Image 1 (cartoon, rainbow, N blue to C red):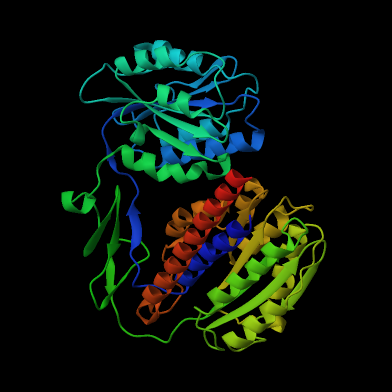
Image 2: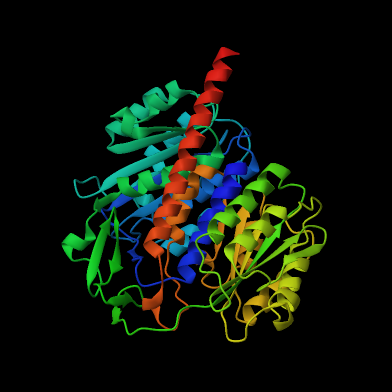
Length: 492
């Protein structure tokens, strides 16, 4: 989890930097690609080998794929089959016609926790899930029929013949294997070419990394700028299945992410930022050091001064300890030195108590907060709080504090959502694995400008390049380590 902790914090701080910087970076606007109308059925393994928290990861993956689709009765329809020893039709292609309905239904799915009858599940897809009565459309060149099978074990029945029948019926099958899955089984299930239809991940914690592949797979029109299917006032920048808006030199992008305003000069930005860092024993000393390291790397990218960014740091576990208040240090060098000296508390997880401290003390004038200056709190945790957080979380937002919640590992999603400001989807982030950070980083690169004049924002391009280089470097190190571990295991 050490790489996850450090990389996720880095990504959140990238959003923070864009909170105080604006104008240059284009905003992601087009999140839907035009998809050829598709009947899509997920076939998900919930046998006893899939532990409950792992099954939650499958649901996250399914939800993220759905998020990237153009959902509707005349566009993409989605169904989910849940299987173990038996097959359960969670919902059919005709059940939900909106993305919101689909996502809510996915969250309600529970694991069956018995055997692994993959062949039976595929047969169910042929005979029922893709039937007219369940909302499937008549086979036509204008419609795709797609099944995504997710499994982590060897099936207790045959899959070769039934998969061949499914493919012959015009169903394109993707097979995703996890952990100790039988790769031969995946190849028997999947459509040709196998390189495009068979995927493997070593654990459910990294299955999210496949999301982008499937979002692109369903995308027919990838250059929305070229087709004119955008609402940018000045400049449209195309990305796969989406687009971003930007402005010409001398203009800055407005908060709607579409229109532009002429620059007129200004007086610079001010920001009071407090980190609320979980120092409980579950974080572990080596990960705590990484948290400190990446706080300092982000401090390097802030404009720290009495008139611009002020930084405070609070650590909490079973109690709360202010490491240093806002305004105590007037430059980056002193802030970084103080962060390095921070000692790991290593006890419980009293997040509610920490939030109350943030409200009552950290953002008080006596502790360096400036009247009229935007207040930003970043809460970082890796586990369930041992106290009540609802009242304090609500009060922080009611007072106008912009609250970001970052969860790693065993952090509880409901608690993160409760802490995060609205819109919640832009203010809470969770990851269990380092390699998902590139996607999270892109989500976080959203302009939230707090300056009187956005045209005065400085160094955003340089900052984003620095962060991207750092992420790429960490990815290379991660891949190298995995190769070394694989070689060592082979030798042993």
